[in-house]
Structures are given as structure tokens and as C-alpha cells.
Image (cartoon, rainbow, N blue to C red; front, side):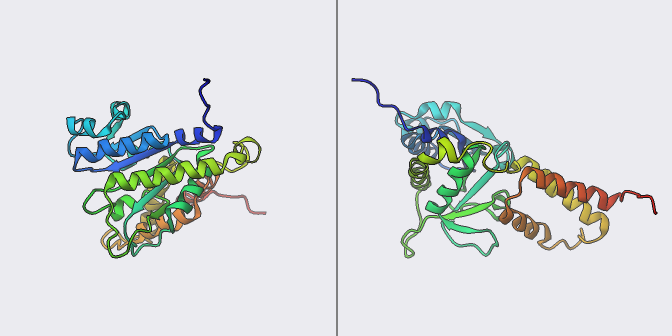
Length: 258
């Protein structure tokens, strides 16, 4: 009997990476790898895991040990997001932030569209406290699993399983977009997170130079500005334009007077 081929849209799942930040229990890493593989995702990134590699992680991966062997371990979240155009921060609770907050189904739909042309990251925090505000600053969207409000705490691997399932369903529903309507030229190229970090550093340097940002009492200015631009979802050319403005703000170009 011939092997049944997977729908082409499922290839979009290869453009996703799951990023686990400072995971304390190696068993959760193994279980998360298993959850990923059952839904067709394969790229696992680990930011400063407490223990990895670890035999407990391998034992709980149950057939997904290849994902653990290929996992990339980084010291910072910025390194784990290098090359991505979009990052979704996962949260078990509402935050007092200005990030756009959506349910996981909406997040999956948006992510699949972007993954047609550029890499996307799903970012999960520690088992005890989730993602910090500083980690969320690297994300462009905040997604929440709408669980029982009286008991909304999910195991890390369970949360990974739910989000990966939603991505798989969104990919299957987007099948008709892959062939004609969603070609690489049909949408603008989003700025990568690397280039966004460069822009934010440039912006902070410029604001310090013109005296708008007080280094003694910065408050949360850069945090707020990051979230403004995160909602906009800057394109590559827009970042270049903004950085050009910042450069000329510090060193204005002289024009001949007529």
C-alpha cells in the first residue's frame, strides 16, 4: 500500500521553532519534544535550561529523541530568536502590558500566514512564573490558552501540545492559500527580530543623544516604545527607513539653500 503524502501546507510547520526559556525540569523538555513531533514541528531551542542533556528528558521524549539531539541551546532569548521574523509569547495569565493579546487559535492563524515566507517562534517561559516582561519585549504578540479561569495552570508540555495542535489545524485550513494566494511575493517581508533589536538599540542611543531619554530615570520608555512597534509589526524596509531618520536626527544632512 503506497505511503500517504502529507498535505503541502504542513511543510509550513518546518518554519516554526519552539523556544523554551530557562526550563527547570528536564522531563518537561522531553515531553515538549514529544508534543512537537506528534504535530509535525521539529525545531527546538532551549534558553539556559537548568539541566540538558539529561536522561530524564530522553526518557519522556518517547520516540522524539532526535529533536533533543538536534536542539539548539542558547544563553539568551535574543540568540534563540535570531533569524525569526515573528515571535509569539505564550502566557497563562493576562498582563498589564500593551502587547496585543489573542487566543491561541487566532495566534496560530496569524503565525501560519507569516511562516509561509519567514521563520516564526513560539516562546514559552519557566514552569513556575512563565515569561518575564523583559522576555516578552522580544515578542510581537501575546497568546493565551483560554483554560478554566478557576484553575488555568497548565503543564509546560501540555501548553506546547495545545499550541502545536492549533498550528497544525491552521496549516491544514490554509491549504488553499499555499498554491496561489500565499506566494513569497504576496506579502511584504517582515523585519527579523535581529534587525528589530538593532533598531531598538539605535533608537535608544538617539533618544539619549537628543535628551529625550534620561539615563538616570529612564522609567519604562524603551519598554513602551518596543510595544508600540510590536503592534505595528514592522517590515524590513520600514526599519531601514526609521533607522535612516534616526541617523539624520543625530547628524542632519545639509541642503543647499535656493
